[in-house]
Length: 214
Image (cartoon, rainbow, N blue to C red; front, side, top):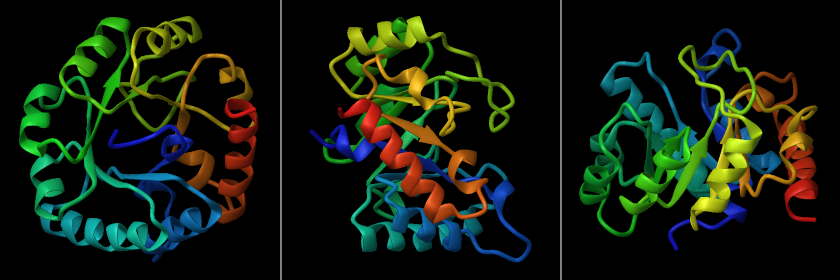
């Protein structure tokens, strides 16, 4: 298996929106890695290719320092060029089977899913894990479709690969996901939107571990 449940316990996704003036993304990313983030995805939709690649290389170096998988959102060519650990694609991006062909057998492939049918199709195409949501209302993705707790649970039961819940998850509401079968949670503002990123990470990780690994 290219990724396991413990690696997916607390999955952070970058977002420049939460940076303080003049701050580099490296700073909060290293803070969340120190706090115990177990998986990191770079997701930057508004950067030019050269700047995105430069930033991805810096964050990848940090992830390797902390022994955390580093994956790229959507951009398969970049992930291959910088030798990232893998890629995450949505339903509107490149078809998962084609992505797996490009990645080869050794890199991690994550796929977004909103239905059991999406999930089964992604698993058959070679996905290593699924990102399912939005499980709560979220401001991080304008086109996010809400997924009910019942659907989340049905997806977890239908597939044999790990499922990560995404969308609007906070320290306060994560307990609502305790009995769904997920391997972990994926967050942005619950970490990067907090005053003390390292402390927020450690606190959320401890809460999530308590709920999902009792």
